[in-house]
Image (tube, rainbow, N blue to C red; front, top):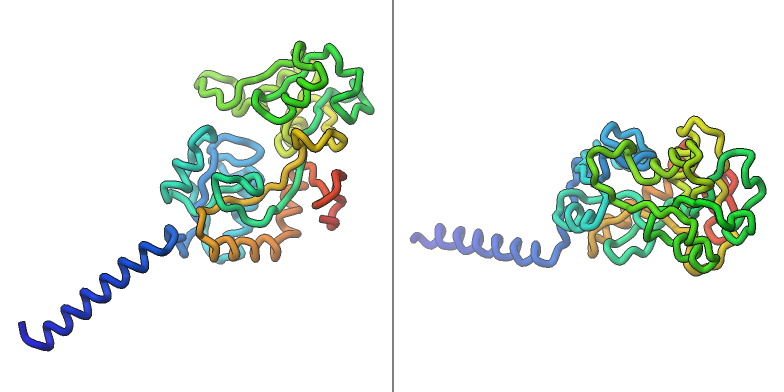
Length: 281
């Protein structure tokens, strides 16, 4: 091999080796020309294949600020969702993750909300806590395994509680989500009340066709927690990507809050257990 050709070959080999070594020390590459979001195709009011959930609207705000388009990878929420989406590199962002989750690295939270008591209007008016004696002996719908179940157990409400199994995969089920099934049961008077995550409860109650009250549970003990900060999830180690998202969340906060309020998400003050008024958070 001629000396010049040998030098070129060595340079190419060195460059390839250097690139390989660099790649081993970098997190999975975030696609720069499109916002790849993993979402549930049937989980209203959060997300839907038609992209009319509030998380879809917020993802569109993020993409607008980044001047790129959104591309979805759809997978039904359930065990293994993070592992099979973000973990395999199919997407670069998961919406609606509890802040501080150990499954992902989370951005700064973009809202804080709470579990709520949902009742038919005119019944249980004035009830603001699960320890209210008027709830004793009542059939209360709740999703099995969620924090309110523990609290209800402490208060002796389990014997009449109706727990609905999460992640039901029966293709013949009538409702898109378990929360929607519970609200429908409340509307048809199969149950007396429900305890549901507020961001789902507000929208579902309005869609039910029955007048309902949705009361955030703001007076419960800190354990089990009833209020949570919600963030976005990215892969561990993708710190630049997280910082980019944090900048967008801060810059577009007013737009994001507007979407959340349009979907009747109960928004809490950042620190205190009280509802935040528009512009206060």
